[in-house]
Length: 517
Image (tube, rainbow, N blue to C red; front, side):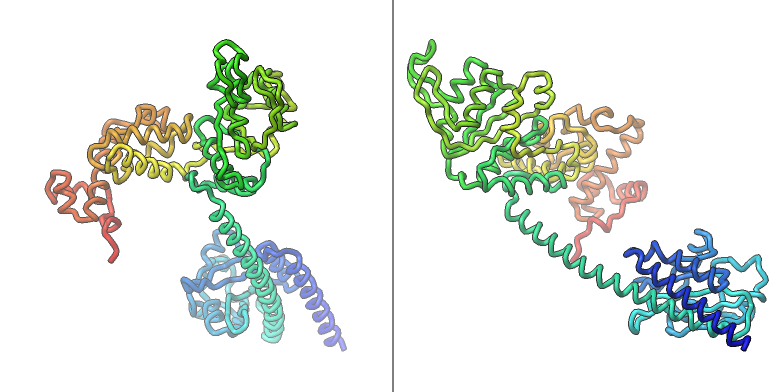
């Protein structure tokens, strides 16, 4: 009767443990968050000294500890086995559980983690069961127990097998959910990529994340007639974005008229925008149409909008609100159907606080804002843009520059580019003109890129600089010669023995330059 009472208490303990583990596995979608608590619960209910959950890496055939109880981080790292190696490796290989009543009597027990070195091995039993996904073994669950009778170990194997099945079920459900979510993510990514490719402007170069967001905004706003405000530093390409918006809209076949508000004096800007009648002022010998009139049914691009005078701001506000204006010196109201795209490199909100820019005009212009990131935040686009400008100025100046040397790349990438894309374009045009060997080298770039301050690098010794230059020349020659050392030596005017010594000195892998056939 007492024996039945013990069995009942054991069953209650087992059911309590299984219920607790079930709740833990349901608690989080990330199994890594719950595996350690599961092992701790097993230790508490089963008097387990140590426990491990190992997984099989099918790519390498190695079995490693993914979660553990009673092991330090370093000990976990030591617990690695190949298929068939040790007790754990044998269980994962065969898919059958193993009981080791006394680990000192079992030659398969390897003690890789070293956790039993300071203990009496005679007092430790070890049980290990496979974790299966269908018929496939994906890992193992194991436990150390103080030496006990074989019947109790058999009961522990049965309990561990149930827990193992629960873990594998949780893994399977999460894998199915992951695959379903992965398919949804892939489908969303595919649709987004289709949209990007469909609406990506052909006149703008760049793949950086910041530019992808700009492309998405262009795609969204282009089909409408919404007023757009493009903000960004000088030289970031605001006019290119305005072009893209116009030529991807229904107004693409209509006029695109540009006005640089900063380049025109205050006495002229009003006439430029709205036109004037004959005799409106001294020198107005003929009637003249303004830019708004010329852009009718199309798009007007107002660059550097932050430089408009307060008087002109008031008149521009009327055009935005009423879609009408009068020529200077005229009394006839002219209706206009024109889309306004404005741009500025100035902080309009700051200008508003200083009462240099009208609040009502700002809110009329800032209907759909687009911010262009500076080039220093688009490091991945620098070489893409540089290659584009090399090709552009090859054609413009009848040159044949084929590539940019590593020494030049190492200057282009870290530079902070205060003048943005416009500065990069000017640098590449200069370098194309200076190149005499079809390659842009570091010394072809402007002095601002060759200083420590400009490139963001620290000063180095003369010898290091010479070594770097020599290595770059070797790399250039080997690339040109496609890894042929004899040909590379001839290009550099040295013997094959000398170039071999230099290649060894700089630890250059010649194979990387040889073509794959």
